[in-house]
Length: 113
Length: 274
Image (cartoon, rainbow over all chains, first blue to last red; front, side, top):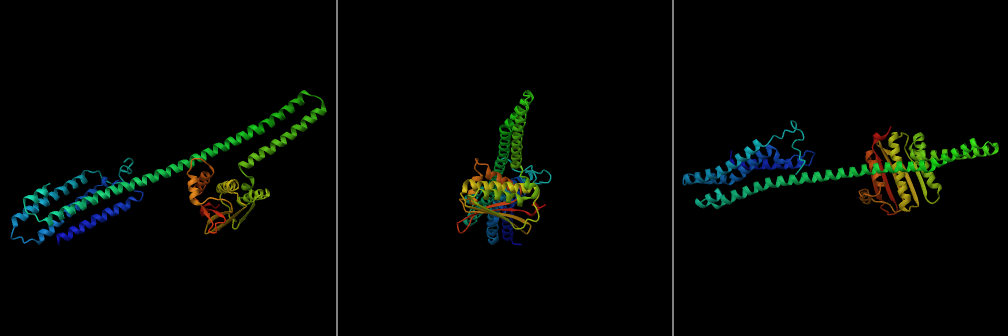
């Protein structure tokens, strides 16, 4: 599958996720978004795919035989940076405590700002 | 930083560089916006909740204060009226024991009887003002009719009431609340509005109970009601509001389109019926 297409899909899905989260908070459920791991996971993939989107398009359109080494260096450099950011955000997601409300009801409800 | 260095050191096309930066900025901006927006929503909800709580508290305080005032009034009635009367009776009877002259004894007993009659009347009035007996025995319709007849009797204002469909009575505690609400509203109309007529109609449809009061004086509109209700002074409207919310009913103040009279409607849900 075309990776740029995939990137667009992921970005759209992440935006939809955020939109849904925003509309959900207007109900009685009042948890801060950033206390839930899913927020960090989605943010990680959103930033990764948004960042590498142009890179993917660019690398697809390049004539690879001409400047293989330079392209691959640039590619791996930019990609590496975003993979790093993505992994940091994913690890934040792992270390943030779960949003399982049934286990600790009310624990993550905001009482103070 | 690394990106900048990469752009500087090697010849990354500016489209790729700025495209990547732009997308990154958009994504990060989106995430930050979402977080802050959500915080704002939550804060707003908290404020709303707090405001509601405050209002509840105010209503509660008003009802407690009203109760205290009522107690003080009863205490004053009993202490100032019934107390001296009974003390006087005691004096007359005491005189009976001391004075053995039969005619003066009779006179004293007669006086004592008069005073006891007065006291009985007084206590009856007090208890009636606490809980109208017609309401308990004959229902809201008769009690309201009584009130309106009394108002009509004064001659200065034309008061009429009509119950269209009151075959099923409300629960007795609801009847009492509705009676108090109407009493307070009539009281307000008489005191403040300078009206020349008051007309009350009762109706029922689809298991809902309606009371509508029309008057042609200077009345309240809904916005004014909300405003006065939230003011710290003045118990009457707060009390009406707390009773209405206790009944899970709704209260509307309107001015008629023709601008000639004001309308107050009270709606109660169907489960208020017996």
